[in-house]
Length: 120
Length: 120
DNA sequence: CAGTATCCTGGACGATACTG
DNA sequence: CAGTATCGTCCAGGATACTG
Image (cartoon, rainbow over all chains, first blue to last red; front, top):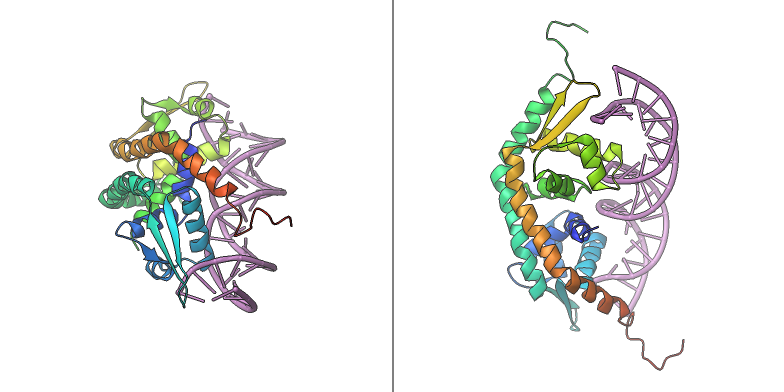
């Protein structure tokens, strides 16, 4: 099978795309990311960041000051995935309404050939 | 929060992107899709198709012949998401190797400051 | 052929507590 | 501050059996 699946799994995990999005405008500290994501647990943020680091999409830099300071930054590779991701986001923004309407229509449709007159 | 999440969830689910990909070159029957996806269970294929239909990305047409015949086809909206998705696939193909190497490097790195001489 | 109905499992994800 | 460790939950997704 194609490598698509791996990639899709990458984007799939709940926070990766958001993290990458937040890193687009420069490096950020762990705490900053945690605050900006709002809703993410330390565990998931850490895990997401580790995976991204492992995949070579971001770098992790530790400044051994006190208190500790860790910065995450997109690599060249990381920046390159930014564009396809942005395309997807753009599509989302443009078509969100349409999808929402489609859902309403679909959901309000008779569950299956149930005539209006039929009382049940 | 932004609509991105909804969209990402959409792409995230294991088969949606693949199904859309398979429908790019014209309508397909349930069985065709099942064969081409190879590995998908009826349940997941059905579920994926229902969701796509609900979101207005595909249409479901039943031809009440015997045996039954059902065709799925991308809608205009469905075709429009094809491009961002293709961009992602392209990125995947181009960078798959790089990511794989990054992973190897990362994984073979000393788990943390363990000197070569240390026998443990 | 194209589903629906059930049951079950693994892993994603969250909450909480502790640490260098 | 930036994590690690642990435990518990939920549900996506697979296997199997049945049906119009």
